[in-house]
Length: 258
Image (tube, rainbow, N blue to C red; front, side):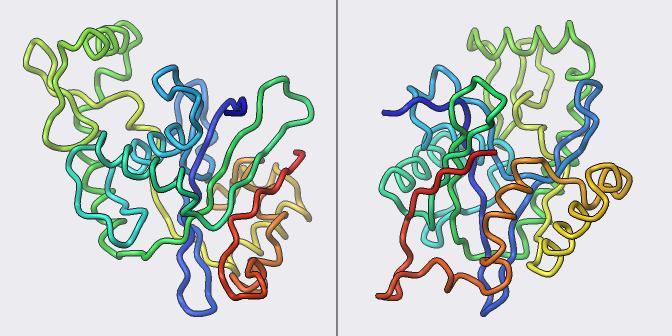
């Protein structure tokens, strides 16, 4: 198994010749006020056993609030750990459009692994995410205080905090309900069409990041912009640009130097 630092999943919705990318907008904090649009991912943990499939699956389930079915024949799963295991197995079996290894030239970290997966979009996804997000907001008071946040993590690590029926919530030893810290990282989900994404690239090319910061709807993470540039042909001509002669999708492995 190769070394990597983080992993993510980028869901793509194909509707005829039109493509849409399902992206999430980061939650703003004092340390990170950018609220950028990006894929669903994050750094690996020791519990991931140095497996990018597990890291990507875990981050996807957490950041999507466990409301997005990545594969069409997935059954509704309440237990988020079962969903993580299912997605990681499907990724390990190369059930994705392609996999990217992203490197930053100025960073000493290992590669970031990004999986692109074609999904069947259900309109209820956005509504269900907003419902869970509203509930998280009502229970996120503990995340605003550093001492209380440390107390929450301690209860989770020690096993005192118990999972609730609604994913991403735990019941503490004192009976209070709180949001898991890793489950409140995305503020909003949105489908981005190809024409919108091409306009995003034009905005970055003409005005740079400064204007995109003022126009928050167009503020994307740098690695996401790099992926969009790499797949400009995908935005212009659809999935046919990634097909082999046989007409089947190829899980190609590209290496992108950022």
